[in-house]
Length: 228
Image 1 (tube, rainbow, N blue to C red):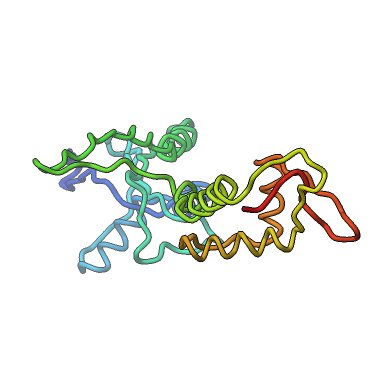
Image 2 (cartoon, rainbow, N blue to C red; image 1 turned 180 degrees about the horizontal axis):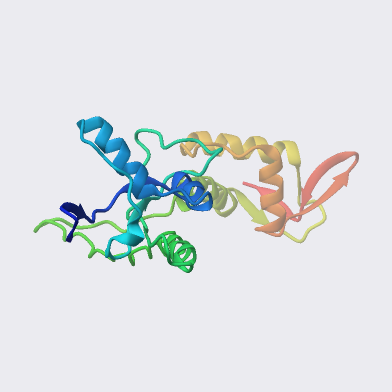
């Protein structure tokens, strides 16, 4: 802040905060902002103010700081909305001031670079504890108990080994009904459970034990085998 004296009158240079649209309109109309400010302040303070031409007073060019407010026709700044970080400084007589303000706005809109993620070390288990390996959820769902299947296969193997005798004679044949009934009795006696159904039993004899079936006198039968 500087001070000049002329004909017993002191003049001080200061900065005035103006809204951007008001400043632009006053600048377009050639309004003497300093003169209007002096008149308004003189009326408020009750002092006598006489208008003078500033070209008669050897003063430096004023610098006016215009607040970065909204333009005419736009909504005013509402409470709670963050204002601009810095208000642009505009020299009223500098023709390049508007371009400087636009560049400052573009720089302020640049997005910050997000920080890189930090890989934290795995937690250390407490002494004496044993960590169990993680089992995927899909593996847990598809995993089936093997006890029932093993017991079922074991009963069929025992039945074939103990109760069945293979033979190449033509009369060596057992009806499928008698064979399945004998198998169910064997499972109950030796406490093999659950007992496979008839379809599962038939498929197992064909595929796993190579039994041959044939219809004899209209009766589905197993051939080349005898029941003990």
